[in-house]
Image (cartoon, one colour):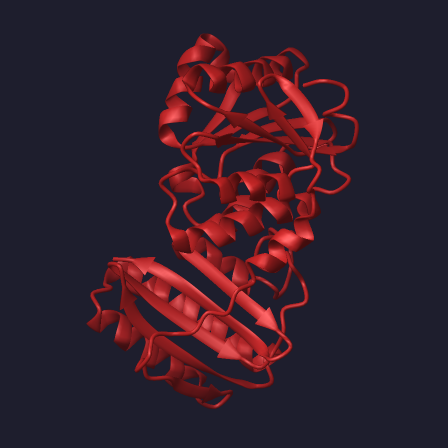
Length: 309
């Protein structure tokens, strides 16, 4: 990384790469320079790239934290608290380096918007911290929209060995662009609840999930997520809300709507502080589900989570 790319406390460049050779050219020196500077280094990328970089590092890889992003970051909302902050917070006092690749060609359309919001929110989550997060983008496998969004969410772009400031950097715009309405399919029954009907809302959702094939731990995840979201609706969403459950593309989806508005863009993406009482609801939902999508505005908030069977 040049002096230009590490001028501020927090550095967040996107790396556009075309193939394996290009990938290693952009990532291997980043890791080795960090190790030589005695900086903690983590690599959280999809499995094929993880194996590629681990093999190229050889023995040096023993000093690197490796995570398969297709597992650790399948739910994009989990990446900041459980991957990036988890590693950075374990190494206070000096610069930390992380390679994080949250967007790859195998991502579903439903996952893409939360991924872009994740990339935008990294800039807020790490503002003022001595952390460098390098985000690779496969310029031949990803479409033009994904590359355009990378310009919005990263202040620096690296391509063909050249670093340049992003002409389009605007993470707030990227976050807002994917704050999309989440209308449920027609004909899905809604269960209305208030404080007195909270237990019934949980029972409604769990029974629907069980009919759709959830069992064991997955059914427990449904119960926990619904309980947290409906409780938040009562406490922060005008005291009432609705819950719906249906099946889509082999997954069970649950949606909770209320009249409140989420004012904190990092809600659910900030790790709980030691001894923190409350404020963990959406964080727990991200932890136990496969995808969380949020729409919030003056008319209320909709939160939809996905659970694979």
